[in-house]
Length: 98
Image (cartoon, rainbow, N blue to C red; front, side, top):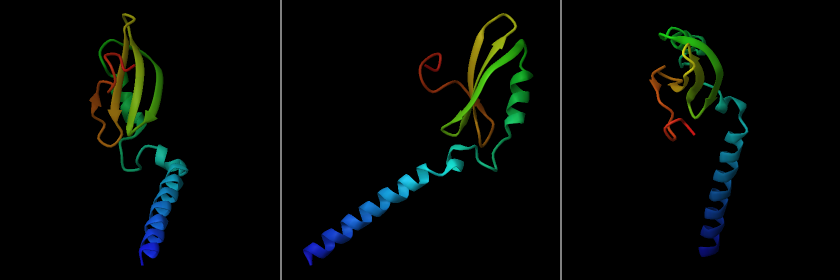
């Protein structure tokens, strides 16, 4: 009986690992949610900021759009937007998002 329960537990753990690795291979898991805010809406918000000059880069990771842009005075701005709600927030790591 102990052997059977160990085999069963081992099988469950292995199945969980295989399932988790299969989710990592799903390309849509790395995309913004289909019911979230559109990237074009986020870009409009950024471009509408007073003193905006130009966008340097946009990326998507961990459920948020990460945007780097420049102001007319040359200041670099890094800001993240929640992909579900569109709310802005500063980068999570460090003062400058490093």
